[in-house]
Amino acid sequence: MTDKDITTKEHAENGYVPDYDVPTLYERNDVYDDDITDFISKRITDVLTVLGEDPAREGLVKTPERVAKAHQFLCQGYAMDPRAILESALFDEDYNEMILVKDIEMYSLCEHHMLPFFGKAHVAYIPKGKIVGLSKIPRVVDVFARRLQVQERLTLQIRDAIQDVLNPQGVAVIIEAQHLCMMMRGAEKQNSFTTTSAMSGEFMNQATRAEFMRLVRPNH
Ligand SMILES: [Zn+2]
Image 1 (spheres, helix red, strand yellow):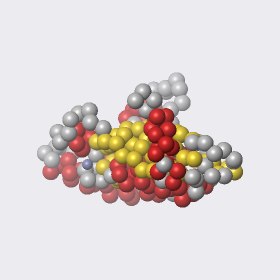
Image 2 (tube, protein in one colour):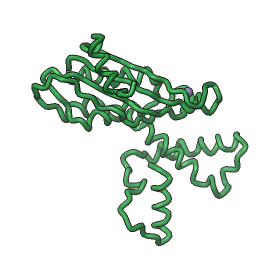
Image 3 (tube, protein in one colour):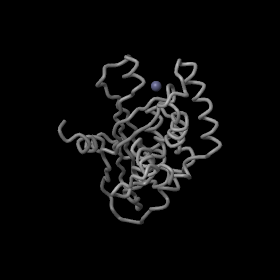
Image 4 (tube, protein in one colour):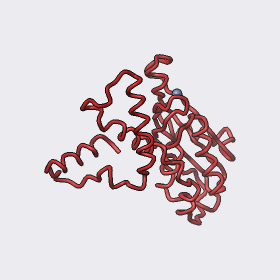
């Protein structure tokens, strides 16, 4: 969901037809509940007022509804089951080497300020008879990221879900992220990254862990 979606729909309402197929915000109806949108919108209108804004001015007329939908989108992970996603694409396979999905884009909201933290996740596992469709790994990252989080718990939840469903020889997760609540409020230097990691099984072994780190950061 981006401003581009909204702009495209508004263009469409004004008779402008884009020459490519853009999904509109409103095709994702399953994400938005009208009652919840209404409930949040009314309160955002109040928030705008007490912050000194005029919620009736042109630029803000649709803001409460947009904020309500943005928060439902960014918190849709509560309604999703990461284990079911993994179970939907499990395959028997005798592959015994490390499988690494790296540089997975990750966007989440910190639970203390509801401000974004974002960066990259690197997820590896060593199978024990079962592998999972590779696209499911980023989806599991998304499901946990689209909840209110702390980076430490997000890292552990990704590891544990994969460990529980695949029962592999081991799982390793690293997340490198920047936190807007620190950057915008001046508590940290602008370019600081927070790195968290969670390992299990074979990745507790120093050599395996070193191999994982070397694959994630080839230039170090
Ligand atoms: Zn925060």
